[in-house]
Image (cartoon, rainbow, N blue to C red; front, side, top):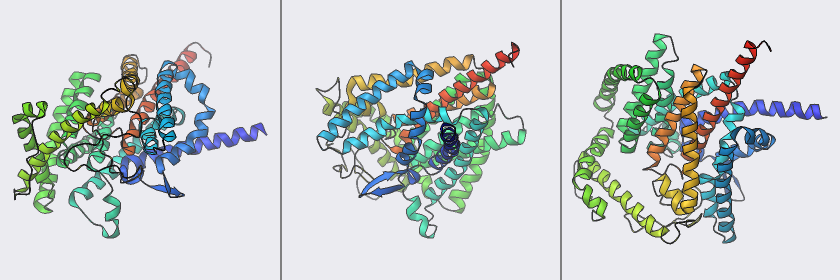
Length: 468
């Protein structure tokens, strides 16, 4: 009987490895389009991400000792953060505030995803499949992005694609670029190298055309980080080649998109870039809180319109952040708790209407401020401790990494986190399910990669000592 149960559990684990790779592929291909898919139970939606987590829960319970043994200190920090979130969930439910469930899921419950890669991607072969899944997903995501910027209706599929958000697709592009650049040094075939750089160039072009300035900043931070974490001279040579190819690829796509197909997104991108000038001119006023929206309903050309809207976005964020700090006043140690939101005095504000899809919740658009106003100094210290531990531990390990594949995998995963955190400083990334879950998944990828490298090193030592 025990043998039968063990065989069934092993088959269950094998199936879960495939399920996880499919989940990653779909999430990185479609983002919000995929994550809002759900089943309904007594009119309550159960989203695909929560369903996946439920399916994996027996695997997590069955390996709790193994997880605790490997992560030790990190596990303790994560447990404290999870416990704090659980307390706020209980308080929220006791007050019949079901918005607390939403906050708990996106800010806390998704932590349970970080051991999943550690358990599912436990060898080099499975990690290579993971990289292939990212590459395949990126190609699909590029297609989705191009559908969005052209507004193709595709008969009955417009409603499906209209659920996507450009900045979330842009985050997927940045994650893919982090891995593509890292593994450029692993590939030996020149044609494959050319394909990798071409894909990177297309991703950069799409990010540029999207006109999301936070993504532009995140790209710069990613490139600097990869140059520092990998060999600097080699990276400079690579960037030079990439720059030449990017100019060629973007020129071809630019002509095709804006001269041939007449996409309207050129005005968006140029307008957003022009808004940087407005921000620079009125930076002092913005910091002092005296700046105000100056976009109105006069007839401007499209570039001027988007430049003014882009400036308004900056002013809007500054006001949101300032009012969030006022809302937190007097609750700096433990925060306001889950399910409570400020009533912002800003342009276009609407009261929250649902804890599910189309909630009308106005996010803070800053990951650290979001954590701080909900959980105070205690929560933000634990959150920072989690992320600093991951970065310091993995950067130190890279220096002594035995496998070149694992070293590049770690570099790509860290680059993905750098990109994620940079965008999360200016967008609702941590409180949006399709992007929030990525933080914990890539933390799990880092620990999974380190576990594989340690096991490979141990096996190598045993072979040298003649134990095999």
